[in-house]
Image 1: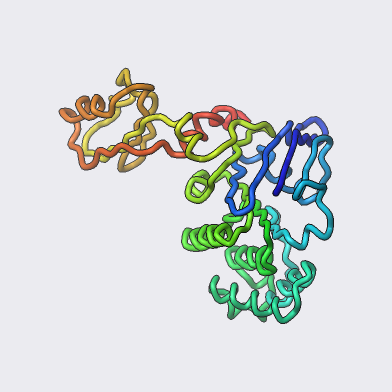
Image 2: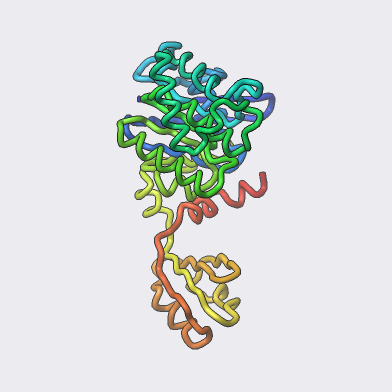
Length: 300
């Protein structure tokens, strides 16, 4: 559906995208993930032909993207840009008209989506009167109201509370189930882990890892244990079979070294801490992200 081959983009002395290659498929959710400044937005802008790559190939259904193809695409940019002085309903209907959607169909689709997202009563209010979260919902509707077959969301959860984030995640899954290709960028690993089938992790414009989520977690994840307890657990990080410890106010997460048995950890802490919970967990994408790019991202 969407093919990117060895794409490069440089700004002055900064190579924002450095030889990226990947492809997406119809009816899947693909995550473009990485730290801030990794090149995610630049990649999506090149896909949309907003900016041109210095080199490399971007194909849509096996050919370069055309203006006619854009009617099949929904795009939510990172920089939000609805017209502040226009009424919310009018600007959304205008965006749908640009995609070739008949006026009556656009009104019905936009009305249904606004009802779903709880902003129907704002239809005749100016965009400038919306809160940041409501404006984000409105622009999300503008990207999907015309029933695109491909949607590109650049940091779609910005400015949204947890309930609204869950709403958007649910919509993405529904779009996938209808056969839509969904590509979204994010630096929030929890979102990608919930719904992505395949991911591309980028850092400083380069691929770090790409592939099915399950394969990546199996290859790069380590055994992890979450503990809740009373007492001083500072000694856990010094155990010779422990790779790392993430400490939080009420619990810690322990990554074990390759081949280590969680039973060894249990035996080591059982006599020294009063345990409330001891649970082995699958390696999180967040942990894999920190392990693969954390040091470089912090330096950047």
